Image 1 (cartoon, rainbow over the protein chains, first blue to last red):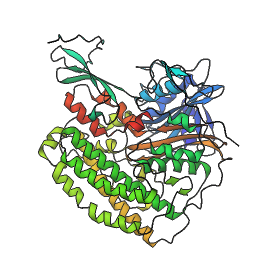
Image 2: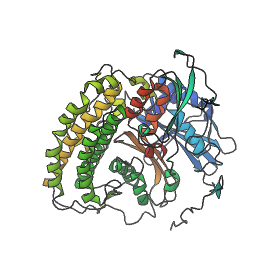
Image 3: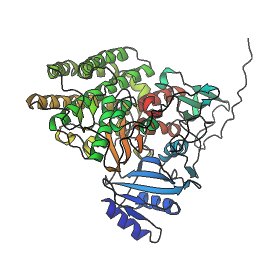
Image 4: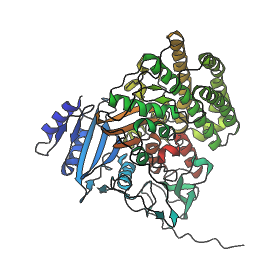
Length: 165
Length: 393
């Protein structure tokens, strides 16, 4: 199934939930409001014609004003793929966890919290994963300032200067 | 004699499906400097006698901020960093990243470049599996196969040394082409290597695969059912070991893999049950045979192909690239390697996320460990073939 067919099927099954299809240059993406995320995810997994049994990747993206969680799903049976995007504001960066639907989300959600700062409500073991537990800030935020020291260890390495033409 | 100290670590509740054998539970810190963890990984193991009741992997010791660095590098400058993700399968990492960029930017490369890339990636897969299989023997207690396999791997590293100038981190596959053309007489050397290598795999089978002790240590141990593997995002040889015929080289072919003739080996429960440690191991051995077949076909093609400029399609500048985003996945040596790249039209990625196969394979450890003997946890970690460079990135 193509992404637009999957979208048509989803929006017919879940009317009035605010699902939208974003046409991209390379791949189309289904945008899901966070209130409808769990319902959409469950339907994508359980609907026999969709059968999205695998969450391949979950990425956090900082879009200046907002934060995004991007879910790349795949069906092992039908071999089709779909991308979901859930956008939240930086003041209230909470998204429901999909761990109960795809256990693979466990570490991916922890990583998105660690590096981007999205909170996943309902995650069974919610803590940082790559950075130390007492690290401050979320390094992949665009406005992140690299700390000067960590427990007295100087962090002197400078990032390369902006050299975009 | 000093009195044993009491541990001050709170013990978690016992999982409901695990039997409390002795009522004496303790925390065992496996790693971060432990040879069986294949790098710097710490597993907090809660044990009851000889049995593990809970395992919590702690990662991040090798975190080198790949994604942060990538946001401060121009697109082509990231290739050497991808080499350092899974440092045993550098060619495959670079291939995955480069193909993602080429698709995003709409770059087409010549047939010859595609064949050279396949040749390099498959030779690299053999080298990576040789380490996986060799160190796995080591984890189980077999010292000789490790040395025997590293000896074979040395020949591949020598070939890569001549090809790219380095033995481990190649920076050979570039966006739009390759860094160098093949050296004179190199294909002949690959042919000689194939003749040399093909009989080594039956030899390995005699030495390790069908060794009685090895079969006993790996058969029926740490069974990963196909359904669990899919739910937890486990891919690559680990998923195929569970009997699922899933290989992106066949399912979403890239770089011309659809034109090569090869099989996908899967676990069949030869040593007891489908998806046990032995199946995950033996899939890698069989994949080496298939990779050698692909290498042979690629060499045949390249010998007949007229020479061309392998740098012809490399863009002169990356100052203006198309805007868009892509998730591109390839079958790296450890499983599905995905790159999620977001371009805002500038010379550097807006966001680059790497979906590393070992990261997902390791996450299933806490699910599989309860109820295993401590020695079997070692057998399990080894059979998952993780590379911490890619787990931590």
